[in-house]
Image (cartoon, rainbow, N blue to C red; front, top):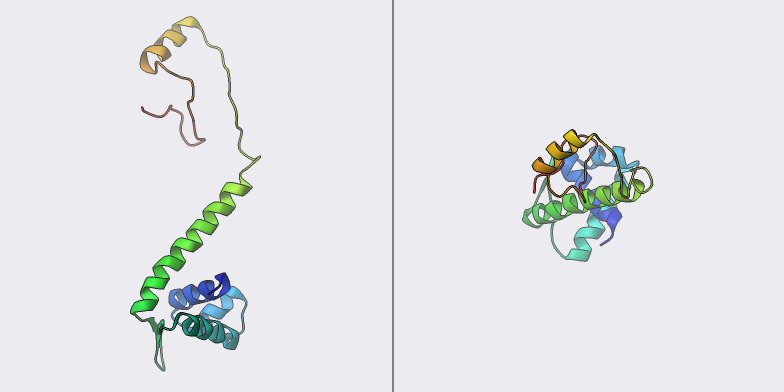
Length: 127
């Protein structure tokens, strides 16, 4: 089992057909079918129930599909995490304010060190 086979299988389930799955992956439909068949053979189970008009997941296919979706999400998260290195500011920041504002902030947030303020949030995290 390899990542291409899993990706092809997931696309077949998502699109509901071999030809529909081949388009987004830029595969020829016979290559797509062959990859899924090799995956089934390597696992020793039927993953798809094929009919003249549709393809649905067999029980083993439903289980593999759940894992395939998790794998896709994990790969996307890993890619975003790695790409974000260098694009997001990191490290400590220091800023000054008048004592009156500083006292108000300290009474509301007594330990400001270690705040992580995402771009979409203007308030520090609740502890």
